[in-house]
Amino acid sequence: MAHCSNVACTSATLTTVDRAGNVGQYSSVTIGTDGLGLISYYDATSGDLKVAHCSDLACTGATRTTLQSEDNVGQYSSVTIGTDGLGLISYYDATNGDLKVAHCSNSACAVATLTTVDRGGDVGQYSSVTIGTDGLGLISYYDATSGDLKVAHCSDLACTAATLTAVDRGGDVGQYSSVTIGTDGLALISYYDATNGDLKVAHCSDLFCVPYHRRR
Image (tube, rainbow, N blue to C red):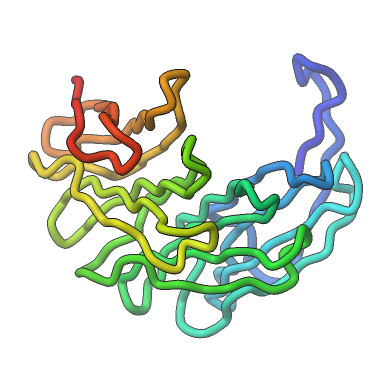
């Protein structure tokens, strides 16, 4: 973890948050409602999804928790804070080829509700999660079976169910996706077109991201 010492980040306090095995790939960080950092990441040694809840602003210490240890899970993690003030983490289940979500039960994410959001083929790599203006999670991710960019619009705060949509089916698209919400209240997704070697953007036309408008 690097905690910048100034706005330009010309210097920083560096801290090793977890050194237990080969850990830290596919990390994602956000700030919780307690004002402290929450990090999701992959434990490659154990094949687990882990989180670290920072103990102070600089994250010089942290409480580490394994959220899922069954199967090989936790790659391509992305974390955000929901309107309920709790962490929502999207990640990839490499054993089953599924997109999964962990909804934290408290600010430290010591416990979480785990849900398989999409199991249709090999799906869930390159996931990115944000919270829409409707207060629900929106996840962009890659469908490796079909070579498509997909989105999942959560049906509730914990994302125990979701509406799934293939946003772009044109060629092999959807790797390296990143999603945010624009000032118009609609999602904007950047992603890679592997067929043409292009950067693409999808601007959602509604909260569910279907239909959509695509630009190159």
